[in-house]
Image (cartoon, rainbow, N blue to C red; front, top):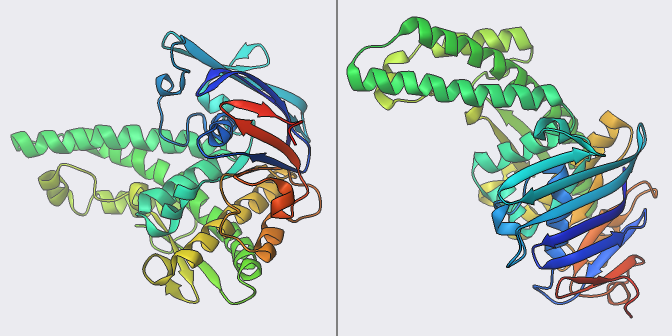
Length: 367
C-alpha cells in the first residue's frame, strides 16, 4: 500500500496543499511548529477515522474558516488506485470513497497505516488503556468483525452498568434484563478476546526480532496477553467463562454500579529480558520496545493482507544512532515511509524524497 498524493484545504495551518509522495522514504523537514506533524495527523485520519492527537474536528479547522477538507489517493495491491475524502464544514462531517458516502466502519481498513508519535511511549509506561487502544486500532484495520464486536460490547456494558446502578439505588434488580445484557457481552467478549490473543501471538515473534535488531541482540522482548478469561483460547469456551463470571459476583457489581469483568480490563504485558518493561526498562529501552511493536504491527499487516501498510514516523530519528536508523528504515523496497525531522536528509545521511515545511507550506524543490 502506497500513497501517491495527499490534499488538504483549511486544515490546521494549511491553506491549500497538494503533495505527491515517492514509493520509498519521504522526509518532511523544517523547524518545529511549522506543520510537519499536522500533515502526519491528516494522513492518519484515514487509518483511524479521527485525529490521533485527541482533537475534535472543530479544533482542526484553520482559523477563521468554516471547515476543512482532506483527500488521500493511494495504491492498493488488490483494488488498485483508491481515493478517500474526509470533510468537515459547518459542524457536518462527510466521509467519501470516490464520490460515494461511507460510514466510519466502512472507511476503517481501506487505508492502513502504522504511526509512531513521541507520546506513544505511553504504550509501554502508561496504563492498560493505552495498550488496548494500540490493539484496537491495529486489529480494526484488519478485521471489521472485531470493530463491530467491540462497539457492541461497549454499548451493552453501558446498558448493563445502568441496570447495576439502578439496583444500587433502589435495591431491586431486573435479573432477566441483566442476564440478557450479560449474554450479549459474553458473546462480544469472546470475539474481541480471541482476536486480541491471536493478534498478540502473531505480533510477538516479529516484535522479538525487531527488538533484537534495534538493540544489537542485547535485549529480548516478549509479550503476554492478560485477560479475565485466563489462558482459554477457543471462542465458545471464552464465551462460557464470561457467562460464569457475570453470574458469580452480582452483589459486588451492584455495590459498585459497574461491570467488574470483561475485555475492558484486558492488557498487553510487555517484558524486556524477562522483566516488566513498564517498571524496570529505561526510557531508551521503552522507546525501542515501542518501535519494535510498531515495526511488528507492519509485519502482521503484511502477513494478513499481502502488502505493507504506510509507515508514519513523527520525530523518530532524533534519538536513534545510524545503525538503528538503518534497521527502522530498511527493508526490501516494499515499504513506503513518511517521516518528520528538523534536519534534512543530507545531515541525517538519508536518501529520501525531501519536502521542506515552513508555516504550513510544503516545498519539494527547496534546497
